[in-house]
Each structure stands twice: as structure tokens, then as C-alpha cells.
Amino acid sequence: IDRARIIEQTSVTGGKPIWWSHPAFANRSVYLRNDRAIHCYSLATPAE
Image (cartoon, rainbow, N blue to C red; front, top):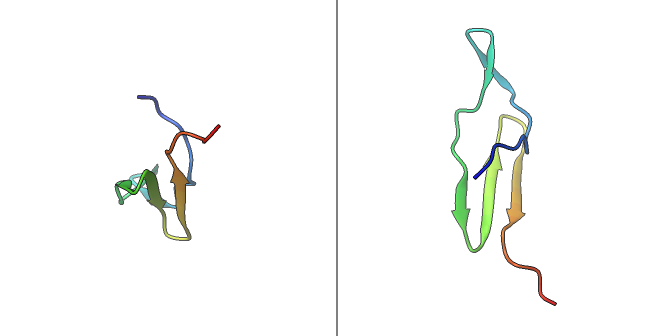
């Protein structure tokens, strides 16, 4: 497990950028959102 900046932080609290929403996992994908967009990234193994 590692940290990766995949989506821009759009909320600021106490002078620090934060995310309020947690990632969601479904159908071999991860769903991320901020105040401006929703992103879906596949976690499936590529077919050869």
C-alpha cells in the first residue's frame, strides 16, 4: 500500500487541503471524487 495523489484536493480546512470522501471499491475498480469530478480507475489485471 502506498500514497498516491490521483485526484486534486479541493477543500481546505485549517489551511490544509483535505478530502472528505473515502474511495469506493466495486467491480475491480476504485472510485474517487472531489468537489469537481468523479474518477473511476480499473484495478483489474490487463488481459494478455
